[in-house]
Image 1: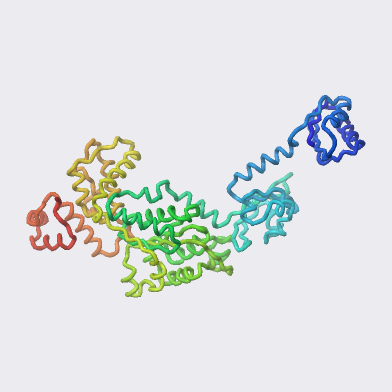
Image 2 (image 1 turned 30 degrees about the vertical axis):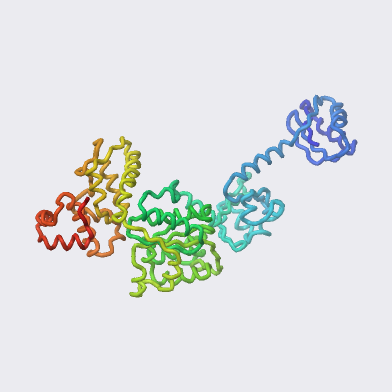
Length: 508
């Protein structure tokens, strides 16, 4: 029974209350004193509230006795527990002796221990750390291994009269860090319904993606640069049973071998010169229960191909310089614009790794093979562009749309998006005509503009892409091989060969 004894602020009145409680033999469990209010918790059965109130109100200057649900301290603790339960990170509060005062629900989940096992126990009896590491004025973060998991403990000391009298420990696991990164990288339109297009090819691939999402095997996504390989990888993840876990992407073409290795596998404290003293988890740790997307897998070195193959065999690995074998429950999705089968013949890609990755395959068609989707894509990119530029949405004339649909798009969807954004940014017309379509900011890099450095495979490839795009554009305005040959000052036979080579046909 919890009571609020209302009284005057008189010297000795609390002592008189306690004397009555002792004389009556009531079991006093807790007492809290405030001005005009003394809160008591009497743990006594068989005694009515009226009896207790009668005895206490008989004390001089006691004006009332009120039954309450909780003592003020208990109420504060309940509010504190509610606040802590809403925090997404595991938090542990300890005193100067290492005794755990408070641990939130996330700490219980992360450590696999109940509140009873945590609160009241000594932190050093549970985790492989010492008080000397924790109770410092400026403590460093501590990397520990507990229950076959890595944790990075961030320590905030508690000061009383300029002395450390406790600390709050924030436990960060690689999986939680991965979820944060995944949430920051996530988009609202990652599902399969967000993929734009109504062509038979794209509809078939959407159905194929949904079927593959239900399976848990590696997937290899192939297709030219700019066809939306990462978009399909994210849709695959969002449509499967791992959708609540992280989706972490890494472009293998953008990092040197040693950096790529540390990004994938992480490294132990002091693994190499310049390494962070607490170590660093890799993507395979942070994506636990989720998906790792390796873009441009064909650019990975043979050394890392061997390490990735070993990982795929057992789904276990060690951090660089580490001694603990870490097991990861993740799905691997890879993508490339290169022909991996030809690379295996030339010894540039491991054949055994290729077959490990190519269990399920999605091949994305280039935009020129799904021209019926261009209208939908232009509409979508126009809306996005107008929102960013803050202008009214113009319409595209029939000749303009015909030009866009007949263009070969060597840079595929990425190039189309750039062209639409650039065209709308430079035009103030309500109707976009064919002459308004701005394929590039200059003629010198007309088609290469759509490519990143890593997309240009060779000079020959770049020249072919430029040539294909140029012929596709001009053939609309010079719709015969003879006229086109005159425009470009070359022979009729050469233009015929080029049009046949690039499969450029006259518009209907």
